[in-house]
Length: 127
Image (cartoon, rainbow, N blue to C red; front, side):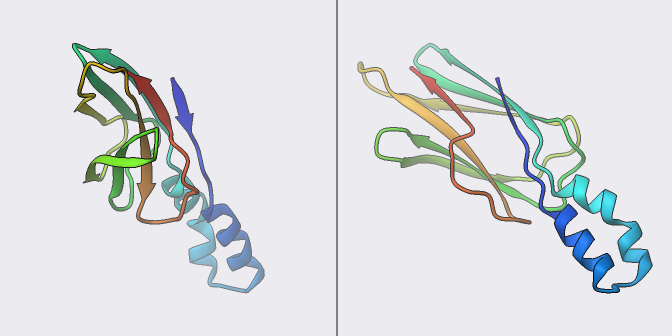
């Protein structure tokens, strides 16, 4: 199980306060910081030759959509992609055919639209 956590709005909020941005916006900083965080649990399993990624949003509702991309690890080849917005505690499952008689390693990367994350697979599974 892998937990993904990133925080960028806290830095923006500190800058806003220092720059004299209106106090009402500065007071919203904790909510903005929490919304900016991608906080998910990802479990992986191989079922009947299919890779299954189960993603649970452990944070607050996301402010907008994120891309869920499944890659073949060898060569970083995109296999499947979906755009979704998750509510708090929402579960999203992705089932992808691993394909062929050879064992294949697949990985998932979650790319939020509201901030930039460095590309690194969030979870992997071999089928």
